[in-house]
Length: 448
Image 1: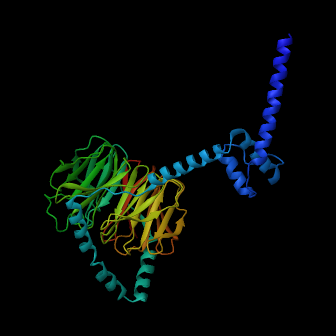
Image 2 (image 1 turned 90 degrees about the vertical axis):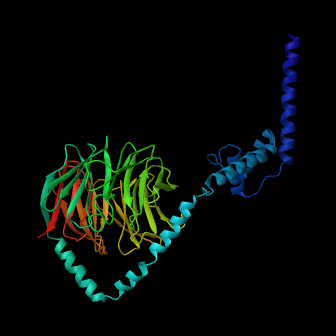
Image 3 (image 1 turned 45 degrees about the horizontal axis):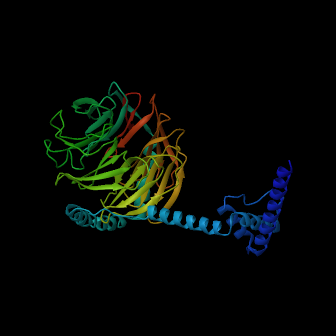
């Protein structure tokens, strides 16, 4: 018993001595008088930065007591770890580049030369008097208010995901979740040809810019993409694909032709988009930049830029001549499903899962207007192809809408589909508007 009592007394004495030593160390520790620095030190040590009813003086004393226990070196180690973490984070955020092939350099020089003549078109447009342009625009808006359903056609046994007019406005091509693509004569909506080749949902099919104009019907006139990563090229003469483009491991959501017709762009859910040189028959650009899948792609009218919209809720504008991202479109709250350039060259529209359409100005590098367009996600946006005097939006609320440009006021609601509007287009001559839907139909709209 006496031995146990002596051990307890010695333990208490040791504790008292240790406490005296700790207090002595605490008096020798220098603590900043800046309350913000004190809070930062507490956070670095993993301690609460403030306690209920605690003032700056009590906080300093608490920090001094903590340092007297763990030692001043603990704070230095914590700061070193923070600096190391910041350095590694900065290294991860640094921009780095792949070394491109010689064909990419040649293609960029070709694209630069191709895009320069746009100045001549801009000068010619400026020579038209402002009054004449305004009158023409007002007459067009008046006509659009009289849009009505001209034709409704069941296009497939499964939902129709995409539709596009041919450059001569005499054909319409549709893509379906059944894997079939179909060519229709317009405006009578008679079936011309069924294109068989895909084994799964077709996301989009688009015409070559010179198809039905100067391009031979046996050449590549169309391109389509599907959920299994397949991309197929089609002629106007055959029911079977002319060629396949391989290299996508995941879903390809959209395909888009460069205005020159030489290049084809594809968007993939592996967070990248690709540029293919069809003359050289090879992939010349594999562009990353989105943190999630890339859903839509559209080229600038002069061929110098490309715009992409991703499931990460961000859009990006890429300069094809340099390979750099020249503008970051930040503002949507949900995924971007559609993007389109205006023919004026400096306005871009994006449609999102947040039910809005945003209009961006490339000159001001910002969003200039947000259209609260629909009651469900936007699947499509499309400017009038010739002058850009109006904007079309299609959404999963079963409607498509027409908006003035500029002004962004509603002109007409195209209602009639019994399911989600999944795609839309405007004919090159401006006479017809097409919409396709989850209800397996496509509709043509004309003004009275």
